[in-house]
Image (tube, rainbow, N blue to C red; front, side):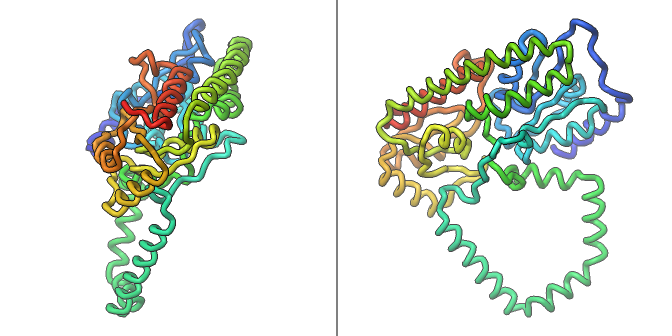
Length: 366
């Protein structure tokens, strides 16, 4: 499938010559984003002066998204492209490489003063378990080296295959295809930082909004006053939204939660919540039996009554685990859905999540 998509992209890219067309006077600024929540924010800032499209559709996970040729056509019409960056939407780099020149690309992970949260290396924050696994891995590696006379055999193997393997690697790196595929299969492997920073409305207000407004003004200088007016209005609403969320979460009996996916450290940091466990650190990678046993034990000890699940990911594993400690599940959504009135704007999405967290923290379930 990846090779087919890459072939289509190469063919389409070969058909385009020159730069992106500049829209006629009076036409809205065409902005494409990688994910829906960023599109929501751009829409708030741009109003009628922008036309915004998100590449990852509702119901799809940005972590496992695979672009198709129509996505390249969408991107080709953009004046501005806004990505998260940091490996989260690395597939967009491939699209940009195939698209016409002249698209202004922004990577929000590079925004000044963002202070991104470091990524997590294990499902449940079990440093001890991770160290034990690393220790066993080191013992196994040491034993393997002793059994096979380690360095001598490895050196000999490298000499025997040096030419063929090095040539193949060089060719793969040159074309970028195998390298991109490897990054996409290990979706979080290149993510040094957790990318879900849009789930903190104060970071959005103080960091993302100024950067996005600057980008819109640079692409549409005539709209400077328009964007500045909408920035001030959105700033005030985000301040009020923050207070709404604090009020909603203030009703909870506990501050501890379990999430199916590690999307919530920025939200938790902002509102003083404590993560007990994460079921799936990487989409599609199920926890081991030992991890499940630890999660159940920790959930019981913390008195957690529900696991937070997401509509973009299959909740089956979370539902099974929740049943083990007599709990249920509550739906949260880090991405949003323009087709659902409860999640069709940034503010509504965050209110939806605040209510869901409040429900889970009070031990209620869907």
